[in-house]
Image 1: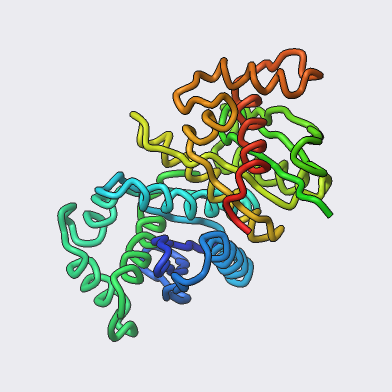
Image 2: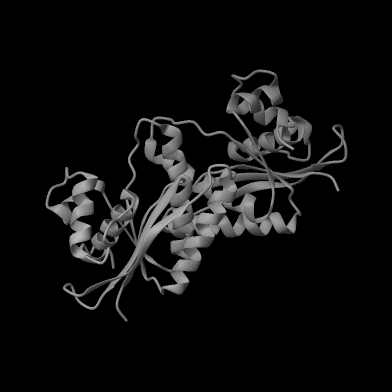
Length: 161
Length: 161
């Protein structure tokens, strides 16, 4: 059985995700992509439980074998960095519970893999993603194109296993 | 039914915990305290799953109703801060799954509640904890005395509900 890769760009407002698989390097199939939206009026524990339930179910339904993530970096806001840690902790739990192979890529690696340039903009990454998957007429949010890009890295760059 | 409070001082090497309940302010009963140790040779997802399983089980076994935590602060090491976020994310999931009441206290609040002085040392906090619970002849680790102190704050300081 081939690899089925879930790429996630986690966030509390919207968590972009993408599931893809490949028979070989040239035949990549994008199963689905989208964004899980969460209501900021819900408590943090409720949103975290929603995130956990959503991705636990998606992994079973799509027989996901690999999880690809971007490595986080400490930006201006330490509280946002900590909260990103909450969601990453949930994803680590899911990795253990479903015995997934985890691979992580720096933002520069993702951009370089897609566009050839580590300093590319989110627009450039989105453009390449849409060229690769022409059925995605338009991607409404960059967190979705980022998630597709991250899952493609999971496919192209064999970091683990 | 009274409140049964779990206090946790999360960490990847050892996670101190304490469960206590009270009929009234003067009659506090310490059900148990200790530290969950994790092997650094295990992968991060495995340790996170162990943390999740351990505290999920403990909450059911002791009919815990409240979770008390210390608010984290960004120290010198951003990666440690992020990893603490992983464990806090797991605790938030547990709060939602077991419908617990969550309360958080700053390190200064915990120290002030126990010793009367927000700048108290861990030794001073441990000394007060041992005076309150003389059966604890010695506390082997500060993460355990800290967890007892945090759970006492959960009892004394009514921040939520």
